[in-house]
Length: 164
Image (tube, rainbow, N blue to C red; front, side, top):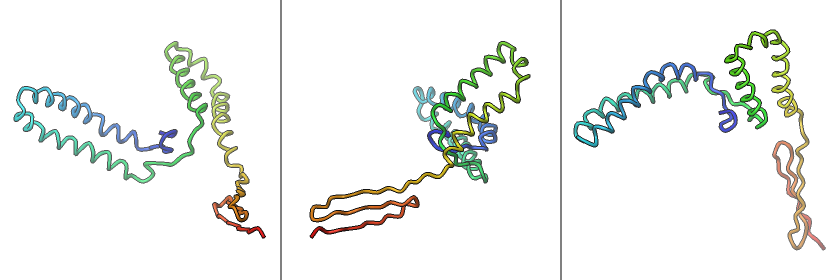
């Protein structure tokens, strides 16, 4: 979500708890209606009425959780190497838990937290450093020259100079 949508949802846990039970009912009930519709379409239409109600409840849960304040926080898009590192760390912790070596690693938890914070924070702090984004464009317009200046605040200045 961070990479494609530039957002992080803090209400995903609430939404998943509320809709987790309902989604299994919706899927199973939907398959039953599809199967019955091959044999008896009129009976499937009757079964579809409560199905529509379940779908509306499901959509209402999604709309409710999306309107909670701070449900969506906009973030800077992470670099691809940060995403890859995240999955490597996630797989590493999963592997350590399966092999029951996690207790040995927990001894170094302060060092591990410091390394992860450095890896995550340094690239983001570098992006905070202001850059001089002043852009100059020189344009040949035939009978003269033009210059387009675009300032860091996206203000545009066009200078037109005619040749004599």
